[in-house]
Length: 388
Image (cartoon, rainbow, N blue to C red; front, side, top):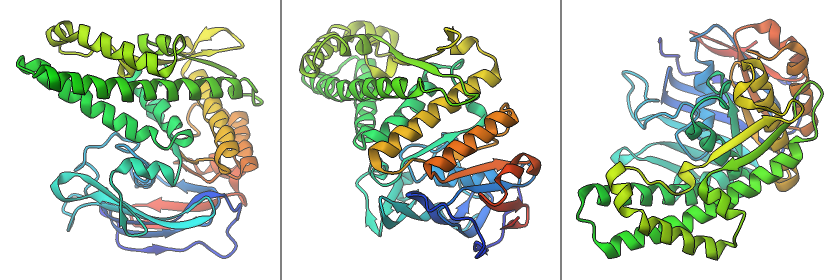
């Protein structure tokens, strides 16, 4: 793909203003995907990105997704976003509005091929701290069958929602995954020190219990909120499956930690033989049903699954607005696909009512006609990004 030139894209003085309480106001990219250098200024209002396929619309959403913990909306490896032939490592920097404050957030590939992050020039101890400043959730075409695909994608999606309510959750997940890898390595080597294995299992029990509880609380909250069906969107019924998830409903946190340590210790031999860890929140799953039809989400059509997912995200946005005083920033990639006009209109109306900033992409400009006067319209082409 041709690299886009350095350019500053201001917003016109007549741009719509919703004054969202959480928003990305300026986006600066360097050697990121197809962008050599780009500065994009937008209001605290919805943003619609239109243009042909392959022009770089999704790349802009991916850049914003790196302002949250994790590997971004494409699950990218550290080198993946780097522009071919670029002058240096990729960087994403943004001015954001968070809880009434304007902050400068930056991230990118640092020394040792590790992702680094800063807020107002201050290095963060880890990218998990990003969750404290901005809640971001995304919907992509790859997620249209989220409920029919593997459990791992659903766990990652759920954790993204938990970050908004529990800003420590990202750190819990990172610590848990580190201990999980270390225990698996020691078991695979066959000569792991018993004391070191016990220490790792203590970490897994502690962090795993915190993860299971946070997920359960979020699912219970969203299940209640999502039952308030919105117009043409179906109301989902949500629950969790898994052994630690079942135990979480049966015993208090300290008892669950003790039980988790016992199970992990008892499973050392079988886990070594299978090369997996059979117990823990990494084995759990988010279960969704269409409440009105009492049908598993996995058996619904692609369009129905997407409508169910949108209903869940809208419930999350409402709950987060009540919790933090601001809804999340939403990244809606090709949102028109598999959503009929009535559901698209309902989605945009609900987000407007919440005062949410969303970034929506699409190749069909006509699909965004209802956003005229309501969103900041930008055209993305091979030559750059311009006001539409």
